[in-house]
Image (cartoon, rainbow, N blue to C red):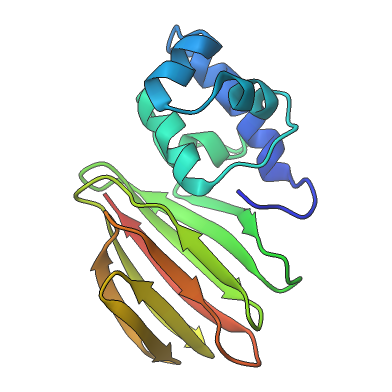
Length: 185
């Protein structure tokens, strides 16, 4: 999770990670081995002193047998479909990813509201086989880069694609692009 300044979601990740790891009966070393994330990173995350990629949070959650949402949700809120937390910030002030909510699917479904400032991009790591995304552009032009090439989607455009391979979102325009992203697993 790239962040220019520490936000509430990092504080949630720190506490949630520690609580969920302990509930799973895992030491930091055991979680590191199970997730492929270094023990040093886990220590830093639990201390609230590190940024982490969204895909690495997925790996930690999977290793503990919980969902991504369980790591980022505000523990003070009653469990619900609504999350409403910023989970990624780009270098441009108007580049953010807001996780709006989540609903169960075979494993999980997530609803996101993303914005990318001019020239901003987000490079994603592949998800496990069976994961998919659906995007819908609500403002501007979004460039979706998949292994077969890049396609630009203007306001009202949408795409559905598997995410078990590298992909990226980019804003090739001069204005902000905003889009809705659904993640299904």
